[in-house]
Image 1 (cartoon, one colour):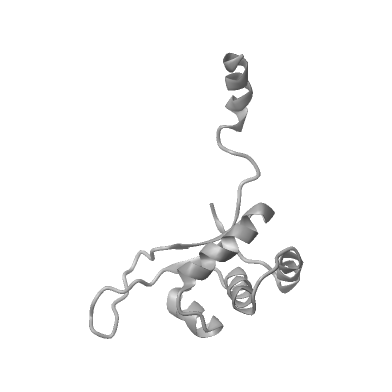
Image 2 (cartoon, one colour):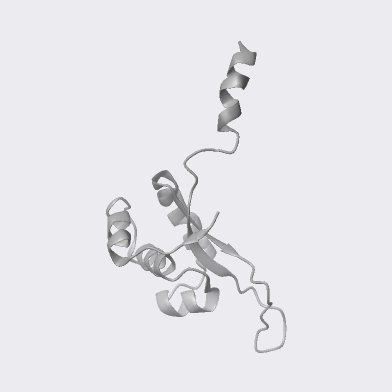
Length: 114
């Protein structure tokens, strides 16, 4: 999967199909327009303390529309103010594949199952 960035118009169209709280809406809008955003940037821009919790909720609504918000650990680790490793992740919106990797083999498997 590859992170995508949506325009303001595309975000508006996406949000028309999703019933969300104000907090969830801020999260989707920010991540959709700012791919690869660090957790701290998302926290500050959206006033959300636990991005993972909100991501789980919004993904239930986004997945049927072909999108998912996920995070990935950055290549460079970040330390907190005490010098300890932090849980900084990069958040992005991803477009889900329209077909599965094994879709071409599904028909042949169906024939064998008969």
